[in-house]
Amino acid sequence: MTAEIPLKPIGKEDIRKLESALLVMSLLDKEALEAMRDPSARVTWVDSLYTAAAAFARERAGVPASRIAEELGITEATVRRHLRGETKAGQLVAKAYERLAKEGFKLELPPELGGSADCGKQLEELRAKLEGVKKALSEMLSLTR
View 1 (cartoon, rainbow, N blue to C red):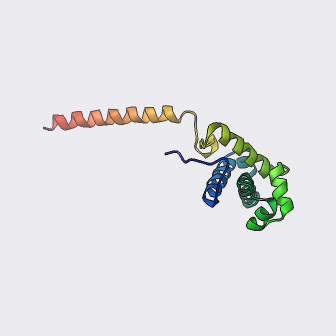
View 2 (cartoon, helix red, strand yellow; view 1 turned 90 degrees about the horizontal axis):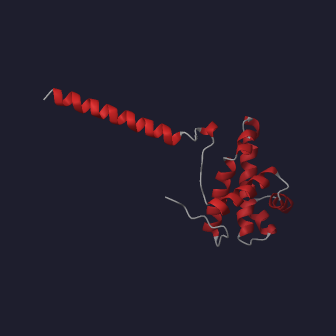
């Protein structure tokens, strides 16, 4: 199932979809994961990425910076810093938006979170083992009949 993520949101639901996609994609970025290794920085990073993603999605919908600041409960200066890429969170969200525009919404878990280029190979190996077990079980059952 593929979710349709609007690059130019119209309305609150579209804004929510875009900000959610940007947040998830940004959280899974290698730079963000590296920065969040420190537990004391993790909450700050998640908050910053959410704020940047929310500001970015609203800006793409044509919402003025003053209203974005009001909706998010932050200063207009903070909104502008995120949107101009003057913050690391703003840079990561902008990079996520570019990937979203090019590739669509794809989630690939990094290796440190269990993602692997070998997942397909591992799945095939497990399927082959399962077929071997099924065959052995079937043979054993046929001998008892």
